[in-house]
Length: 320
Image 1 (cartoon, one colour):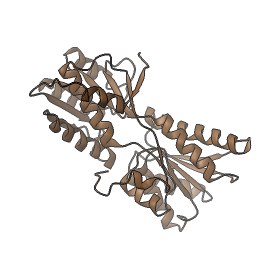
Image 2 (cartoon, rainbow, N blue to C red; image 1 turned 90 degrees about the horizontal axis):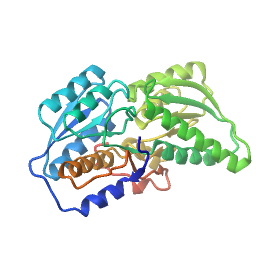
Image 3 (cartoon, helix red, strand yellow; image 1 turned 180 degrees about the horizontal axis):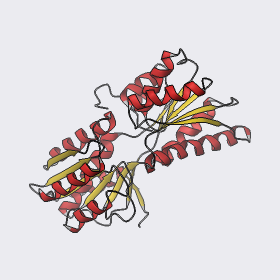
Image 4 (tube, helix red, strand yellow; image 1 turned 30 degrees about the vertical axis):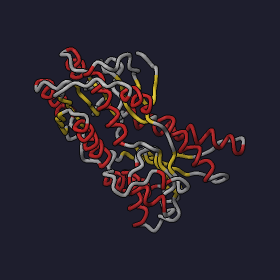
């Protein structure tokens, strides 16, 4: 596997430098779910960008069902798409369908969620979960310097590689920050809840953790949506002012609004529109033959969004 990495900016620069354009292209978009705002925004951005560059988008929602997504991929290929963009439900379970698409001459670009190295994809477009996480963790170390941390961890779903990268990135950044600040590192994860990436799941997971650990003082979520749900659980028990909320990734509009008012600590930048649009541009470049030797991972620029810089990222008109 080629582990070269590049930035989304470099991809866009390459595309802007080439004027070649294919007519009448069709881009398939296979989303694992549209039930969470992040994924809905990704789908909207991918379809919008495809239309902007003269391609017809065909989108399919798997409803978070692996078998449905396999069928969606097969159907999109049968419809004759020129390229396929996929947010995979299962890193192992989609390999056969992705490879069948590639064998049929359809280039596949994965977005956001990783897929097994045996999958024949052009590239994976995502934010750098590790680099974002490190920045968030370093911020958390600075913000809580000298405090005993009792952390509730809200994870998406078991076995998800993106979730694992996000939480480990934050914890690595936290350790590095604590070592830098005081020459020692210490924190306690009092419980891990599985929130399925959604608001209601985050609420339920937080309620369960609070039952056993009402002394939590930090909630670390692998995305904003679960953390926003957890905030409702904290508010119901009058704890919202006693617990620091930190997300490894996303930059959801509702989270940024709370960061602006100081009710939410920080989140990592994971702009769904930027990820999706970058993937569409790469797909078009492959279709046109203007992009070759593409690295296996294409990262967008990392950042930690805090009260100090939130105005730089907040867009009240954003879908997500």
